[in-house]
Structure formats: structure tokens, C-alpha cells
Length: 172
Image (cartoon, rainbow, N blue to C red):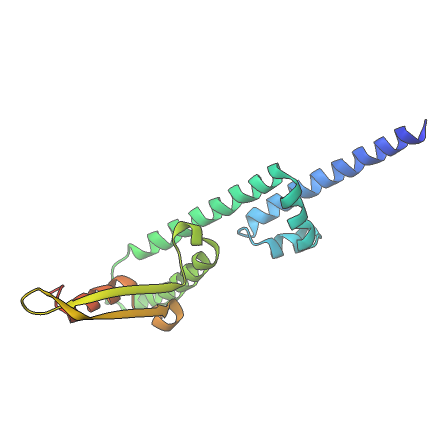
């Protein structure tokens, strides 16, 4: 067997090993909610290797993107379904709901980090013009910019916007 044939066989084996490693990574990537650090550690590769694969292998990059989008879908559904519940008067249920609000804040922060392309942004900007009693536009306006961390999880953004409308006289 010639040297070229040995090199070809060796290259084919390396290619098979890399394909198995990529498949294993994708499985772990899905399991780790599309967090590359955890998937890399589970498979035993560096993040540098992961990003090299993403930049050189279009099919692998597409598979990663699908997993990332599926993960965001699951997390959005989790957030929306948790917001559907009402407020309970039962102390035990209220404790559970308080824990749920904390989890919802964590979910929102995750989406703000990973799903900006879906409209989740860490900064909230509300511009509200004030009207006088006759309904004409006053020359004053209020511009509020705050991060979600500054607002906190106890004040939903829709309540903040409604409060601004009431203050300005538009929501009365």
C-alpha cells in the first residue's frame, strides 16, 4: 500500500471521528439549552474548536442555529404559560407565585441575552408626551430609560407604561 493510500485512510478515519464528535456535540448542545460552554465541556472540546466548526461547516452551523431557535421557542412558551395564571389569595400559592416571578425574571434575562433578534432587549425606553386638560400637547415630555434590572421584576412593563399614561392624563 502506498503512502497516498495510507494518508487517505488516515484522513477518512479523522473525518469519521470528527463527524461523530460533531453529532455528539449537537446532542449535548440541545441538552444544555444551546449553551456552548456546557456542551463543549461535556464532549471534551474547546469553545475555540466549536466556533471553528461553526465557521467552516455550514451544515453544522445550521444545525446549531436550529437548536438555538428551538430552545428559544421552548423558553418563550414557558414564560408565556407562567404569565397566564391569576393572583391567588392562598399564602402557599402566593409563595409559589413569588418564586415563579423570580423565575420569570431569570427567563426574561436569558431571552434578553440570547433572543435580541426576537425583540427582547435589556433596555426599556418609554417616551410619553403630556397633554393638558384640553387635550393639547404640552411642550413638556418625559423620557424614561432604564434597564430591566433597575425596574425590577415586581413591576411589569405594561403596568409601568399604564402608570405613565395615568400620570400624563391620557389613561384616565
